[in-house]
Amino acid sequence: MKTHRLLGYARRNLHLYIFCASMLILQVSIRVVAPTLLARIVDEVIGGGNYAIFPRLLFFMAISYFLPGLLGYFQEYTSDKISKRTSCFLRHDVFEAITKQDGDFFSSRTPADLMSRTTSDTDNIGFIFGFCGIFLIEIVCIVLSQFFALARVSWKCGVVPLVCMPIIAFLAIKSEKKGDKLSDSISDKRADLNQAASEAIMGIRTVKSFGKEEKEKERFSKEASLFRRLSISFDTLWVNWCTPQSAIAVAMVPLAILVGGIEVIKGSMSFGDLSMVLQYTNELSWPMMEIGWLLVELSGARAGWRKVSAILERKSKISDGEISTTDHRGTMKFEHVSFKNGEKELLHDVSFEITPGKTLAVMGPSGSGKSLIASLAVRFLDPTEGKITINGVDIRDMTLRSARDFSSIVTQDVFLFSDSVKNNIALGNRKNAEEEDIKSAARDAEAQSFIEKLENGWETVIGERGVGLSGGQKQRLSIARAFLRKNQLLILDDATSALDMETESDIERTIREEGTRSLLITAHRISAVSTADEIIVLENGRIAERGTHSELLEKRGLYWETYISQYPEEGDR
Image (tube, rainbow, N blue to C red):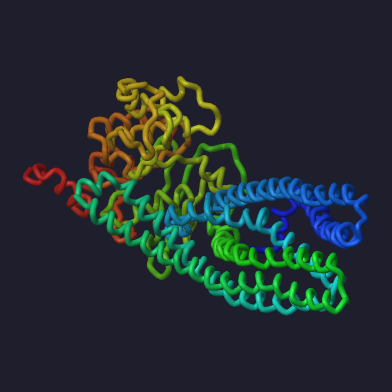
């Protein structure tokens, strides 16, 4: 991830960082002063018998212990706030970057993987920007201030942490490299675990219908077991590192006391000075022990950072053009369009035009390129050769909003949100759709009758992806959603396959009677395309035949063969 992007997140929280810094400076200053008060009590009150100053020293000493706790509370609260704010900003940017990506991006990543990037990874990164980052700065400030304060009291005692800290740093760097690799694997495995759970839950009907509950349980258990083993390996690495590191940090206290005690015996130090050595060394030891925890969090954040960076820095292959238009009427043309995926050509030299009020149908076997044409028309993909124009303008030169406002697409794989029926249809209109417009769209899609029979009518909340509705009902809602947009071109990408022929015919007739809207249909069924003004038959990505229904039947080619397979009784005539 580029430095300017990181600094951008920090700048958004600059005022909070300044507040944390002020709290931190006050805390560190008080922690340096506090041991001197105890030293005066030991030397002047207990050793010197000056009891008059004892109440005053005791008061200031109590303040020196209370204030850092209070300041620490405000610092920790603010650092947590920075963490949450940064996670929120980053999560928003990651989600926005995901929504701008092209089809290739989504074909190479699972939903669970992307969810992991937008949730756990962004949380880990935000934690480093906030609590962990500020805590690390606090540790550095405490170590430096306490070390120099200790060295000022006794340079010989200062040698003890000076020897121990490089050893701890060496162990930290060595273990952090191993932890970084494990964190990367854990991040990937967490996404795999989420994917296994998501697929089993989303496909629960299929799982149950084939009696594969045990198989899915085994699959999930396998992923969970792999995740557990990686997590245990990571924890083991941390423990193996923390044990010697903590031992060295704890050993600094008795070693400093030993060196200081010898100085007291020699008369080079007072008992008050020894008390300062004890407190300064103790203040140095706990930050050393916390470094292990910090490295664990840092490893997790770095692993997530790399994956999040890949999303934020990736440029979509579908770039935004500069031509913006509000005129969404007219003609779409495919001019010698070809499309390759790598070295494999999926579509070759396809040309046609769809004028207002006309219907173009595309037929062909699975894999012939029907859905690819639909994806190209709405610019989910760009052709590798040729061009697609709207009113003579190449859609690659248009803004994505303008190009996509020309058409609406309804696919066979219907997605409905976990919301009311009315809101699912209203999604087809960016502005607040009027209730009458929503109902009109539903009537045109032959959906009103079943909607009004639902338990709560238009306000009935349907499950995610339309759980609780039949396939035909879901498709009708999806078609109603497209109708509401009132675009020039309506694309039905095998979208009526779950409808009966009568309903299918009624919907298509409604579109034709409107007179101004163009229709692009991709389908397998003859009944869906027979009334089209022109029918294109694809074979291996190439146009094999084209013409009207009657013209294609006369040719006795691929279309005829499909017709006879669906209406065998016609072959005997």
